[in-house]
Image (cartoon, protein in one colour):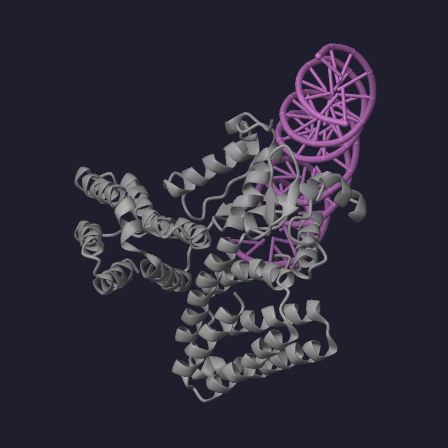
Length: 208
Length: 208
DNA sequence: GTTACTATTCTTGTATACTAAATATGGAAC
DNA sequence: GTTCCATATTTAGTATACAAGAATAGTAAC
């Protein structure tokens, strides 16, 4: 009988930890991350640290300078705008693939995440707001039950998270953006996919 | 003065080697790849091998079973069709972004690759045909000068290459598919983007 | 012959030690 | 004070050794 519960390796744990530190803004774009430092911080040898960093580099959240250091990925303006275009294409594909049944299954969770965004905006907790914003869009894509799309979008969204963190959105703009989630949800409930596409296009372009 | 020429690490070399072995069909979907075996094959220790395999797993060409073995990624039918949808969306985005100037700059290379495809079809060298087919589409996406799109598409195309290899296309269908490259090039030359989109849609859907 | 258990073997996971390249330091020349 | 070079130091790259879990084989019970 196979073992269904497999313990994460140290490398897995470190990978997830660094990833979440990057996505929460604790580690900011451009910051250098020396292997030895992390090894001591986590109390493990360099081997699993190296593995985690290399994987994160392959994932696209870390940039390696050979024989030198690793640092957190940082966008140029051009890359940010390029990424937004791909993001929009993928989100529009997601909307294309959505059926009413899929929407129904996830609408509660979507509403909850949208509400979380609003709550964190009011409370002024931007780090958490961005995390929830990210989750909202991930949930929308997850609705489609298209694994390939989801994994692609997840990669892209991770990088976009770096943008959300680094951009200094005004409270007003941020309020607008977060409010659009509600409109998107409404259009989904109405099964008005044309409206949904338009809203999403506006939504993504607002954040560039 | 900084050093501009940096030697690839062993891990980099192994990574590229395994990748090309997978993309050329030498290593087929589902095949198990033990670390020690590769280490002996390449005459290096397990350390760089591990790094390469882990990176390939993150890239999506290898699947890891924890504490057990690594194997080459293999599509299920559902995943294949899911992937094709994402692929089409990205290729259509590429066409959307193309300007006549971009097309002009790459049209010679595109034509060469399309010709290479036809040549390898005639000669009956399918492995090489698939490599060239892949390069044709990569070149088209590269035209757009959108890094984010290119790197996403590259990842996706790597997996699609596994499909091209595993599917047993008839000579006739393959001839059709390859011929469509010429039509796509012609539509680009004519700057008839509507036709290009339609051709690409047909082209991608033919291969599902 | 089949099943279940145990022992062995094999492979991965991790730590450590060593090598080598890049960066930092410090002093000499101007 | 600045520039350049030599040296020292730090950090990444690789090999190796060992630990631990998974696969396998072999044996006993039914």
